[in-house]
Image: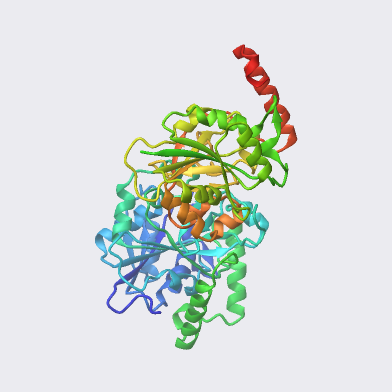
Length: 281
Length: 251
């Protein structure tokens, strides 16, 4: 299977807001001597499938850091209600067949999580693709900050909730799936999102993607393996710094210098994982 | 449009064997359900679908139309499909045999008013009124889209109220309507992944992308799952009959 055929233009977008309610200035937080957004940007930049990579920023301070570290960016409005609208604004000035959106607050994210969401052909309908991983820790399953996914036999997402779903009455052989912050949109999907009012279920759950589900647009999810977490608090940052130090100590080659073999291997691995079906097949 | 109603009545209920024949004020429970369904206008017929001779004999002696079906039917929907194979109709209303207090006005609301698409499935839902009810996994919660099609059914309380607490939870009510094609689809299709996890039959349609049209009703009925539920229903029926001043009804 080939992802992102040669005739397709695929652009990565990393939304990075300065004002986070729980952690102001988050994208600039220092991790092993570099700002958090740099780690994400370089991880993404090393993936050959992308024709271009942009940070979608809303603040002068982030702009300065982007200039200083040589990262491409698009300056967007600072009144977007959600990251999808921010990516949509980018899509108005940057043309592409697909926009792969990677959260700016997941510095541990690797290409193994990103590649499986890249489609292999162009879609003429609004297209959404996302990544999910298995939830193993019970506390993680209960935590409403982790969005749980219900998927069909065919890998389509049926429902997303902050409550643990599905309920295991018929069997306990369930592995819960958690949403991971890597997404793929085409322009049609981004435009649909900003031109459509918030749905009533989306309004209750506070999950943007339910807008697609409530309007009968498929959500395609790929299963990935990931130890990445989103940095929401300074405590999360300490965890990420610890992990990053560990990776660097274990010879984690710099994203800029990773070789072809390693690339191919991780690519293969990501696809294998994406194909391992559900335990209740 | 020809519409018939089917009341599936299995003899072997795991929690309450022989449940459809449980006596309520001198008549078996299935008789009470049948009487309520009979009151629904627009129906060309009402049939009990059973897998047991005792139930069949009792129905016959009470003048209830009854159809014998296979013991192998795993769900009430498959039992209804067996009936549909011998009795043709445009739509089949399936009413659980364990709700003797079901209101006929509620059942009639499941009948669609407009022309409908091929492979039609409809179901009733009602607002959940207490906190314990929303947590209780025997109540199946349903989330609908802007056109009242079911998005998902779960025994977990969905949706999670993170952004607002101003939300009414809805639960599935055991009254459904199908066209022949939908009954056939259900019977010919293996249980899907989520149906197996949740143990909710309706997810067979959702798992395969078939729409279920939900209609909101104000239902108060109680399903009889245990002998304790039965005692409650007996008292209710006695109470209704006293206030109706027609004690002869169940003598």
